[in-house]
Image (cartoon, rainbow, N blue to C red; front, top):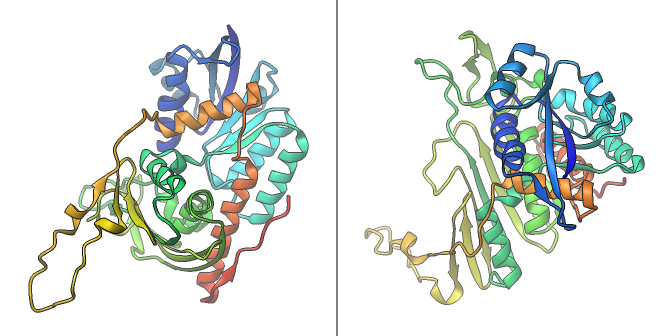
Length: 382
């Protein structure tokens, strides 16, 4: 059996712990590793690294992780570990990835890869020139709902895609009334890398680019709807960055996308995120897991009449797209894909270049808000 050592940094946070450590790396480890094309089994051997030794030790004992450390430099110096992964804070990420590349490690990370486009570009170029493998998480492409949208697109179901409408978000509790917030307080502080535009426009870049057409222009309006919240210590603090973003995108091919992102919205839709795609031949609405479609010949013909109650139950005029294949956890599926890229040189389209594109769109979104105007999204050179 072959062995793959993976350095995991930043896996005590919500996303790093739940999706990357427990549901991806430990799940791959506990299933006996990955069967390579050669038929050989690849054992997954993680080491978790963080500043808090007590927390690292507790996590290691809880999940039977043999190795943990508070010394990142020592971990990077170990030639027996091949991949470095980071899910820590945005502001530290580029420096950590650069250090890992210098140590000869393949790198994989959460997004955004930076809060500054030039830093992101320099990092992507460095990774390209190193000859090492590199990647950034593009998790929403692996959601069952969005995979069904891709299936409909590939089948020609939509005809010419005209528009995409996305709704993302939920009410993040302010932290008072004895109800703790579901998101960390740094999300609402600009100096700590917070803000929903920086967070979510990185996602919308790869979703739009890969499913509906490359983003060519953006208009974005941000807002700080909730100006004061309660932090993890029960103390009030001022929110100095955006908690909502209302963005419109022009896509290659002529489609228009509108995506609202908010941590100050109450949900009355099918899921926490939904995408409606309208085309000349058909439409579809997808959430995280489910997807509904309506073909041109099955489209009802409503007539505007404000004097009578609506007689059409519009929800019943859509058909659910069935589950036709088993789909694993999206983070785990992408982890396995990246590992195969490292070990077997399997195809991998999500390098740090994709991360830089996300940072570019977020930066342009913030600039569009500040200048109150449309901005073109130029091609990046790597």
